[in-house]
Image (cartoon, rainbow, N blue to C red; front, top):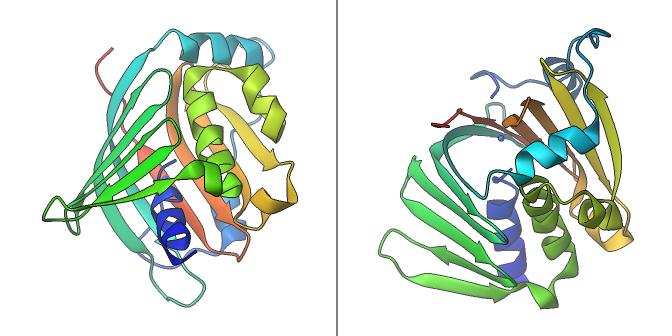
Length: 210
């Protein structure tokens, strides 16, 4: 169980902006809310999913801040994200220390600065698997799979859209309260992960080459 919690902390860093001072979640929600939809520039969730599905492989730089209720200032990190369809997800952290997380299928592995791995089978931890699938299914543009585990709340237009994933299972809710994804067209710009204990992480994803 200790390993699972350790992996949870790293996974919660996948899928996020913020300042160097503590921002209450109510304020973070306002920052991450899209502007009022433009009726002339409409977009549907299905369109977004189709656009995301066309990108079979994605690499981008990220900067994230994790806000803990016990700390006055957020923990910061940056590095590179890599996704390859159908289920390969890699997060390489370069700052504040070297670390690498690889998730492929049902296997998650964390490599320390010496390259030594710790491995966990996700099939024994359904809540963690659901959380990862929420991110992977979004990147895949797999709407059917996404709606199996989550209630979806979509809003916005082609200039900026917001997709909130609300876990359906009680076990998943024990880890994560919601995932908020902000994007422009087929580019995901921000992912906010709100944990059930009130902590949250905001990751800003830079747009990579087309």
